[in-house]
Image 1 (cartoon, one colour):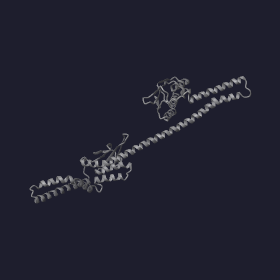
Image 2: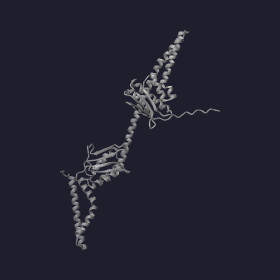
Image 3: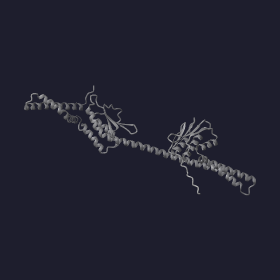
Image 4: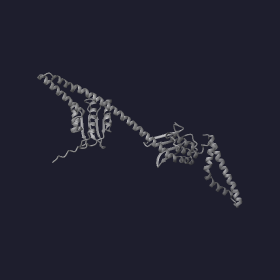
Length: 400
């Protein structure tokens, strides 16, 4: 059995004494009125007076009892009014929820209260009083709304004998101004979340940009080395053979060296941007690249749109496919499928039992994200690129 606390006893005594005084005053007044008015039933007059006076005096008597039992902060309406004043005085956003839980608990003379806030993304934010309370058995709770939108709930733990309509009425008084406050808190938390997501995305884009710059520097260094070895080297040899009146054998050797340099230069140019991609499109360029590399892969392009796509999209899809294929084992039974999704995006799928290296996965992801696309770098691999038909270049009209 729970023993009432000392303030609760004082509050009950004050209410009892007040009611007793009201009954005594009503009886005395009824006798005086009956004597002067000649009524023979003064108890009826007293009863009528009590029935009319109790509803009118209940709130002042309750507030007086709360103030005498709990002190200056015992008046629940004063507590609610104080909370509204603190909100008006620009209470910090992070302090609104715990202060609201504290105000609700204080208004109902409880030691435990909580506030639940529903954020715009569906998550729940919960604050309790005292802070870090594990659980609050909210016997009295009210919904908090703002502009008709359900934003949260206020709950207070009270003894089993409590939970009256008067307690709920006090929380309803608090829920009015709390609706605007919780709506502002929700908006602030939502803006913070969006700011964090934007900052994280900006950091990812910055890191992706740095990786692209590093890859570009590595490609330039690799291209420079290949040009030095396969182009400059044969040309230097040909130049040395053509000095000082060369013989026929030296001329043939110089011609062969020049042809070797020219072939190497064509291969390097095709690796930078294949002419087949510009002339015939993505499917034809991939077929040529796979055939040149000697890879036995099944290429399906049935889902490609009939019209050509923008050069940026075709180039990104081409090099993403080559990067994935070159990183996989030569004969692992991979299959490549290129199609257009229902949303219009270009989808590149490579079904393979093997996994990509970390460097290849980062390269493909950066190239896709640079165009606003996305990719999945675990089998089966998938690259999505926002596709748009290429604008045909108008041909100049012939002059007659």
